[in-house]
Length: 559
Image 1 (cartoon, rainbow, N blue to C red):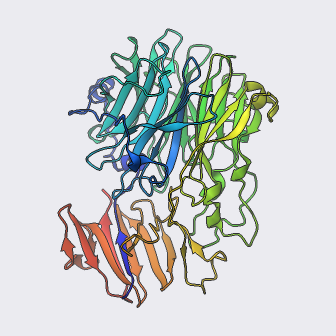
Image 2 (spheres, helix red, strand yellow):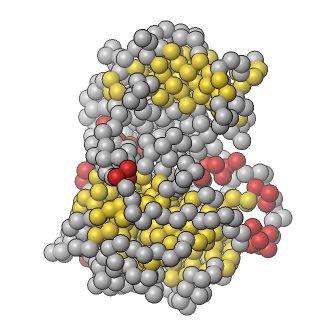
Image 3 (cartoon, helix red, strand yellow):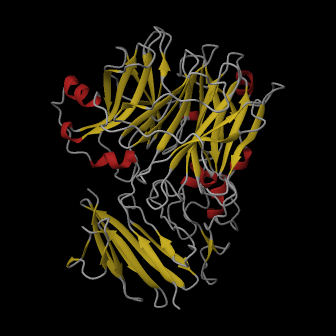
């Protein structure tokens, strides 16, 4: 029987990239116009967490995990949350959800998941965050069903939290912790898009009643992105400077940047790059926090100097991600973020190999990304990040326990500090690496990866399902001019993608021995008109078999 390959072409852009489809900017949008929309909340019942998760959420069932967040209670109980579940971020067949883990012994062991936020609608749940507020309560919030859902537990020391009824905070999504300002109010940041106003950016809120209500205070509009292949700014952090101004730190396509507000967040100056020596690289989340000493802490990936000899090696043509998400390093600023000192590298397992004999795909297990942290009253800094979120051998949530002195010294000098603490590691077998045509000269390892697929990379997903069906998944809208071969044991499938005037043009050329079925939105067309044949599913997607050995071009609007 001939092998069957199924290609699922889906519009799976992350929320940031989806926001790029906003209408043309409307310069007349006023403060009140934005405030009205920013104050709206989703209708319906907020997604409540599962407080007694079953075995289907165990370490040997989840496939990926990424973007952890950490908070430590007044008595030292550690709380961790992260996104997990499906085979990749945005998977529509095995959707992502959020889990909550805890440690009551100072990070020696971690238990969980003690709670799970998973949508019964098979909708994606993401950007989960934990925070201990000034009253000592545990907040756990996540983005689900069109808004940020918050859960509050009065007792953060309990191994099994008892959450109050969930509630919506905003229709946007909070990706990070709030900032407690000098006057005691809480400053929150949400990412939002209002196409009717031509607004795509951040909206700011302040709570003066311990989280009972949130008032809109201002906005920060992203500038139009000239490069459609780049993610727009996002994943912001805010700190109050010593002079009372608020500094906004942003992840951008060009690196970490900072903007300043002198009026409490109502208006903002232009974003400026951070100090060149430690500037975070494109598409990489970082962490910023005010320490008890009054100094600022920054944790980010620091790219090694010089070109990457393997940057263009292998079937996937854009591999710069393998370089950018390494060298996770902590820094301290004593002058409110003007300059940064120290440089404590948290994990040496993320060093890329520059051997000409190593496949770049093997570096999937060596990527560190998405740091977050918290500081306890004794001065201990707890950090977390993920290691090899898509790799076959890693998929680990890592914790570090350090002191400010370690960061300034650039090495561990405190007796109680510990690096590379494994909080959780998945044991689910992955099918990330499938044997390819042994004659392929492009990969000496003879393996092709499933994909980390953050930007301009291809989802090759997954290797083989239980029913013997292979699946491939390109992302739409961010494959700008990609042409490559997808290698299988039965020969390469030639793939070419380009974006023209808001339409994704994908050409596939399956080998004669491979039967290929394409699953596309029903509004996709061929070069000469509407697609015919195949099966229209109830969900509005069309399954279209292709003829082995014959190229096929599909046109899929991305807006």
